[in-house]
View 1: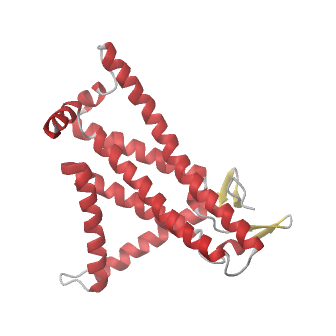
View 2 (view 1 turned 180 degrees about the vertical axis):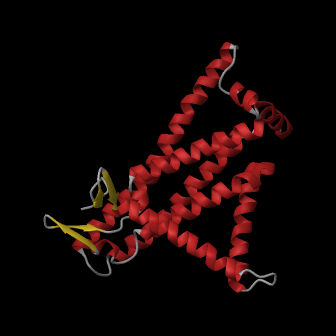
Length: 247
């Protein structure tokens, strides 16, 4: 049975190095390794692998541009960073045998690695980065004065709307973190139970399903972040003009 909280592998004083933290470090190493490997293989005349990567990135950029317009160049790095990190973190827990290597504590096996996104601390941290980065880009694009008018106004109606938007920012934090955590943790629990009951063949359909869930959840988190950034980087005046033009 997969425990709700991540298990500590090493204790450094008051700080616990958990298996989800080790997995997050592994994901970072993988991403950095891929970056350095790709930098050495870049050329003006792209090979097959470079062409595939550039095509995928171009499609993702086109998606970002269709949502964010002129702000796409500023939002795209955040969008892709979230997507790549979360995707690899989600899939890292699906590597066959990864949960079978670990330490024995009180007759229970504690795996060295567990999908980082099955830890609420990690998903909450990702959500905090998403929300803070969104507001940072908004202030940078609109300026402090225009940014603050979204939430604070002397007009009672606008003040009420601003209050609702402030509450909405907290709900974004909760929904982003719990959605990702819930789906990945539930998948780990299901796979753990099925693998305990049936060692061969039967777990394969569930494993394939979790591969799809990992991809979908990475897309959902990164695309919601992209949408939130696009909205907050647009002033109320621009939003009204867009609505009028669409009508």
